[in-house]
Image (tube, rainbow, N blue to C red; front, side, top):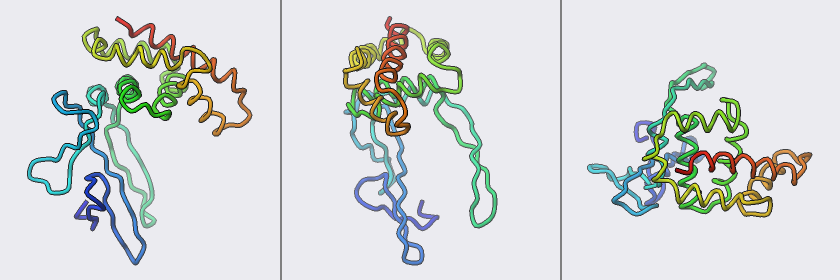
Length: 199
């Protein structure tokens, strides 16, 4: 970040700022850790670094164990560039989100789980369940049992807060959607997913 002429924007170690030609730019550079010996949401400052660290977010260890290499492309100054990056795979992403939903209680996390279950490139809920069970065993899933039960409760029916969060965002994205049908889709997807992962 310093080589690109960015400086820490605040004591928060994941925000960096640059001013180029009087125009400010801020980058949110998040590094995540999943350290069982540290509190959730704790900021972990790296040894020998004065302005770089990570936030301790439960479940990110699952994402780190399911990585896929993707090529991202874009134009910079009229030149087309490509970069290979590691991204979380479907199974790791879903389990990380289950943990995040329980820890953070944010509507975005409930929405993300339901949306990705229904609209993933693997082919939907059944494919997602299969992928999770292929990559993560019973010992892994036992660590998430409380989170899975919590997710299930938040999609118990169309009026539960997880289902409402899913519907609210979906209707913003496409106002033509029927709210009751969309809620039922989310409830059924989460129900199937959770039943398959409870050990």
